[in-house]
Amino acid sequence: MFKVGLSGGIGCGKTTVSKLFTELNVPVVDADDIAHKLVKPGQPALLDIAKAFGNKVFNPDGSLSRQYLREIVFSDLQQKQKLEAILHPLVFASIQEKVNKLATPYCIVSIPLLFETHMSHLVDRILVIDCPVKIQIERVKRRDGLADARIQSIINSQVSREFRMAHADDVIDNSNTDGSGLAENVKKLHNLYLSISASLG
Ligand code: ATP
Image (tube, rainbow, N blue to C red; front, side):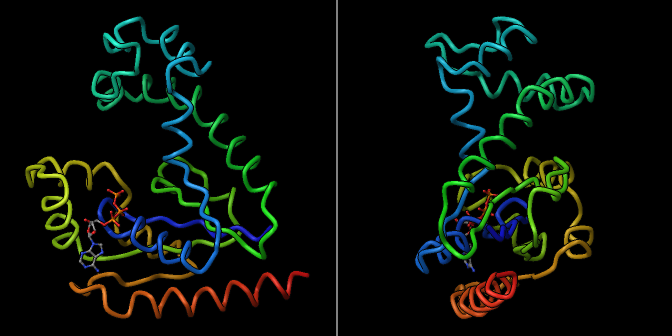
């Protein structure tokens, strides 16, 4: 199975582009979705996280307190690595398992933090969704109501736009405010990915 990794900074339009691939009947395996499901109450990963970080990781209803965990790992590299050591192998395995069940010529694997989490080796080609930081901030502010400084600190915690572009095989420019041209660009890449996967036999 030919796997195209889809990535991009916060608010660049990964979800928007994923939907366009879905409309072309291309399966999208979503790493964030997988990671969320892995830490649902009753899942072994949640218990491993509690063992590693203590029972304060639980909300009163038994779900994972993402906010608490985020605070612990945000400024402490060792704690961050401890969390990643629990989650990453499970995310890798789940992506692989889902991909193995597919029977289409290719699939999209959406990994927002593809570079930050060193998952590039999981995919055969990298598609980056790009827009200027100013537009990222505007869109996230409109969507989530976060303060500019908070959005900027998330952007600063991700690899730079330049780094992403330098490591992309394909780039979709999603800076047009009306999203015009996006579907056409996705269709062009769809045809390219179909022909690459056909050439691989
Ligand atoms: P995140 O990293 O936070 O998951 P994302 O990369 O998946 O974000 P989207 O959710 O697709 O980004 O887009 C961010 C916001 O910007 C959404 O509210 C979306 O509707 C809007 N948006 C995306 N593309 C465009 C566009 N071309 N023009 C205007 N608004 C857009």
